[in-house]
Length: 187
Image (tube, rainbow, N blue to C red):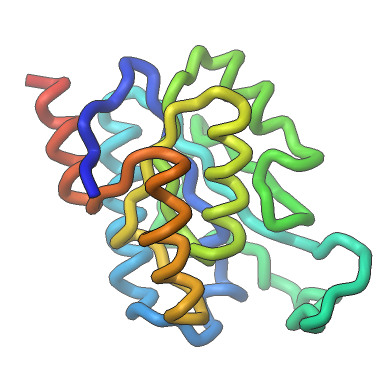
């Protein structure tokens, strides 16, 4: 795992750190994941770089072998966690699939902002994060994954994404690695 550089116009994408999802069981302490993602958001905002906050408020139709946890979501379930301190300049994306690009304006918005690289954090590693990273890569963005700012409900799925999938999609590193590269750019 090595994050080598951040492009001049890098955006942070935080996936599904919302009240309903952070209440579900996770491999890693969710408070730590939220704290790290929040520190990334603060650092990006402090440098005038785009922050995208993604939530999920639905599920795609269709059959799967494993039934979705729910199709209807209770009130407040999709609300972003307050620790992210959502700002008016943040771009918010509400998705109804695992991938933040599908049927949303995310790709168009990022291209319109001149973004060439994305740093991705959030939950779940093997679904929302991985699907969004795959799509970002396919769209030509450089992809960086802040692996200690994400978690999953399944330890094997989390490890598979980090160890086998992410090296094919981009660069992986810690929150500290990304923060250090941001600090070097400001120096």
